[in-house]
Length: 393
Image (cartoon, rainbow, N blue to C red; front, side):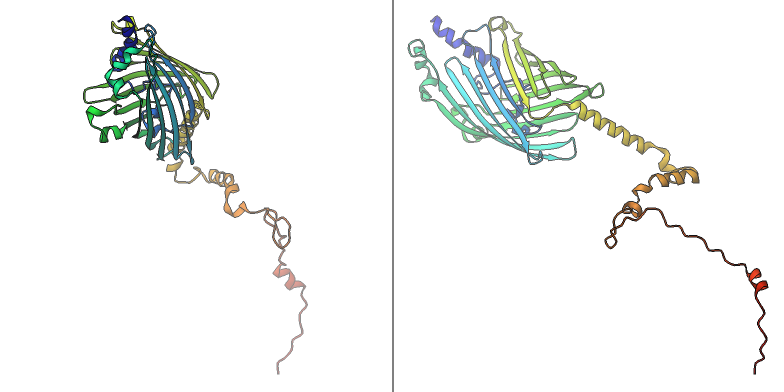
């Protein structure tokens, strides 16, 4: 009847727009504003850490459309060598309520100030429940899926991920729900295992004032079902972030974020289905609030490193290294150079300090002594009296 179709329509649209028939248990949030360690555990603690809360309402043109709630926190520790994070996500699709708990632990191997390789493992717990009114939703009791799981479904699982990043890009791959993939037959799986990968550029613009971020993500749900996202985002003066992305299945989303302070960011994403069905489903809206534990001001960091690299390059390219006379072309220039660095000489570094025996300071000046005049040999010979001659016996 009409009531039954009204209840089933949100589920059908949700499954259609996700691109798969059995992966409605996989959360699909904007990875730009939410930390993506929900999909790749190696990204936990890869920055200074943050707390993120997000709400997503799907398909404004459909009654009882799916709703998603998400809260996440992650932080590094042990001098950024390790990271830890946790997620809680809940999806409400008509009579279904799926709650997803996960935690991630990551190890970060730093090669230098900007490059590091990260490895992470994640544990998750999925809890599926039915929320319906027996008086108005009696049709659900005859559904085969409800009959098999009328008491709900609870299942633990685990994931593994790898990622690498440097100053200009980062990339990663992850295998999610490995217990489902390895231990359960395909025809008896209640949850979907999936694989993800991404590549994201971080290109400084205007001497580091702005940031351009091209983005590509891929998710493989089965041998025949997969989806991808391609996007481009621009951050102006570390204040305003704007961008757009497209997803397989004729889905386009637009993102706008504003940093209220150096720690607090608020964002909004709007998703549209461009196929003919989009006229019936309407748009999806996602609201995000994020608090960063430390200042994410990449401009200051980039400008400081940029100036240091230029200074080092100028010193490396100077002609002083090919001069035959170290420190100057002439002896006068050499003397000036030696005088300039004399304060750093280890021979004079410990002068003007107290002696242990006397307790007095010793001046750094060398002591001067009055030069004694030697008497003239001729004058002394003239004035000298002659000694009497004594004959030897």
